[in-house]
Image (cartoon, rainbow, N blue to C red; front, side, top):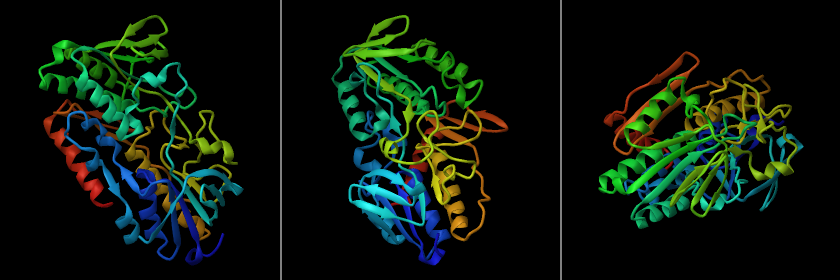
Amino acid sequence: MTSSTASTLHIIGSGFAALTAAKNLRKQQPQARIQLISPRDELVYYPSLIWLPSDLRKPSDLTVNLNNFFSRNQIEWVEASVTGVSAQGRSIQTSAGELHNDGLIIASGGRFIKKLPGIEHAFTPCEGIDPVMALSDRLTQLDGGTIAIGFGGNPKEPSAMRGGPMFEFLFGIDTLLRRQGRRDKFKIVFFNPAEEPGKRLGEKVPQKILKMMTDRGIEAKLGQKVMGFGSKQVQLANESFTADLILFMPGMTGPAWLANSDLPLSPGGMIQADEFTQVVDCPGTFVAGDSGSFPGPEWQPKQAHAADIQAKTAAINLSQYLNQKPAQTKIKHELICIVDTLDKGILIKRTDKGTLMLPPLRIMHYAKRVFEKLYLRQYR
């Protein structure tokens, strides 16, 4: 470790956690050299992918070039892919060569577990803009049929799932088809291995979400393990059914380069961190967002809001480390989301004190749109 005025600090990634870490680290360490390592100098605003099929958003609306942000914050962008991390985080192997640092924040995101047979026949929306545009084109081409939408998890990492966005695609597609006057030509089926999907959001949330499905004529197949897919088939443990369009979000694990690292991993394949976001037994190395496994309540989410909280915590505690002081700031566990239905939004907030869930409100749909604009403004 060197003096904070001469420190070289690395951030891996260019998503929510990485950028929040970058701006907060710059505030904490105004004299440090900060390098951000990522293949692309852009941010994709994943929460608004749900609005692409309805043309409420275009791909260009959701992609922000980060050159201005880097310049304002004196961040050096290293155009490279990480291939490994060694020396407890002090050395990073990349496609552009080996880099060395005095402190590291890993915010590279996770990786979807795509091991199910035939999973290539399903669209995975949270992978980015291209898959969502492809499924949107497919939906437009269909004159009718069955649409199957579901999500899975990582049995060894309960928090590593993307349930919220799949509920949004489910209700958003239903609303879109109604607007188009085509809903009566389609059967929509939601499938999930859990008996009570969405329970991580709150104890009473599954009951309310399932009632919304019933009210909209959406069929639910619950409590069956997902076994695989065909070109027009969903195979569950006890039955299979045909589908003309399949959206499926598998569980998540850590990035592929972890296989070439000496970092401690959780049973689910993610980087093991403590309550201060520091990687276990790796002083000066921190993790934030989807690539990390953190202690805390069983309901803690993998979402942008949680990633931002973890990244700010990591930046503060890395600065403490550079100043040769012990970490003091702990992760604040909080889940906040608006489950959008294309015309309304359901506000859900969960903390250790319980869950607040409001009924679908039109104002919450617009609140989500306003938040998007305010959030992206800081990076434009």
